[in-house]
Amino acid sequence: MSQDSRHSSKTDVYEGHDYYLMDELLSEDHLLARAAVRDWVKQEVSPIIEDYANRAACPTHLFKGLAEIGAFGPSLPAEYGGGGMDEISYGIIMQELERGDSGIRSMASVQGSLVMYPIYKFGSEEQRRKYLPKLGSGEFIGCFGLTEPDHGSNPGGMITNIKDDGDAYILNGAKMWITNSPVADIAVVWAKDEEGIIRGIIVEKGMKGFSAPEIHGKWSLRASVTGELVFEDVRVPKSNVLPNVKGLKGPLSCLSKARYGIAWGAIGAALDCYDSALRYSKEREQFGKKIGQFQLTQKKLAEMITEITKAQLLTWRLGVLANEGRATPAQISMAKRNNVAMAIEIAREARQIHGGMGITSEYPIMRHSMNLESVITYEGTHDVHLLITGMDITGFNAFG
Image 1 (spheres, rainbow, N blue to C red):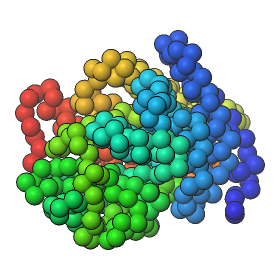
Image 2 (image 1 turned 135 degrees about the horizontal axis):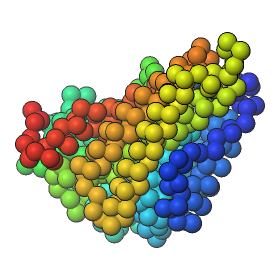
Image 3 (image 1 turned 60 degrees about the vertical axis):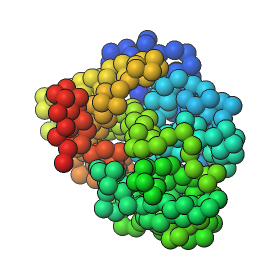
């Protein structure tokens, strides 16, 4: 492994920032989960992530570690391979993972929210028993096939389809921008049946006509593996169809679960950038004093922690509502949109505080900044989430 020895020898000294004493609102279980994941990130992710991002390589060996710390389906029942924790624990875990890298959080949130969750929620008992324990342990890697080359924000326009063929369906079509797809053992794929109704179907690696080519040339999420899903007359047994859901509400409910995790996760990226900028401002000298003594630097830092604190309050309340089963998709959209935009702005300001050093792999700023350019677009773009809020408050649909 050609690690950048200068970076890998550095110690991850991140501590976390809690300006409004939010930890007092968390349980002992929440704090224990956070400590365990933070320690794992410091030991397993931070020393290698710059090297993997530089090489645009995915540290797939981390899948097992993610399973061991309970990052796959933290809020799903333990009997099905989940963590049996609450929704706030799930959010906290995603936040700590994204503090390490958005791509690592993506690996976990896709596995838990977009693969394990729909099989648990909409699958048969046989499907649950067959797939969930292996997904929870990291033995199986999964991916989620909704977005198509020509249908991103408009998933209802999908052309991927299934046709009846006795005891099986014949699947044709293609999906695009699929996290984990080149290394996945199974894919939860959404396709239209002959009546035009959207159905979920579990496609297994090795089925004839199924391929998952990797997408190269990404300047963002470089440590996460992304690909396509291509289906050419793939014969999938009818027993692989998710029996308990029809229509767009299936994939959209999965996306709500994942977007909730992103709302928490983006705060992690912002905290890492703020933490690095604050520390740098106390060490770097210009004009005979620390740059943290200058008013404009303090303005940047004060605004950063203010925005982070607002986002922390937003997600904590959303977590309480999620635990009560009351968090609406529109409320989740608001938090996802706000928090990712906030994180991008903080990454930008942190880069300025670091000066020229901010563009190097000596610091995590540029990597987070590039990653967040994907996070602001995937699982609902910045603009689409704005219109979801707009429709929720006015009752008028501005889409299309």
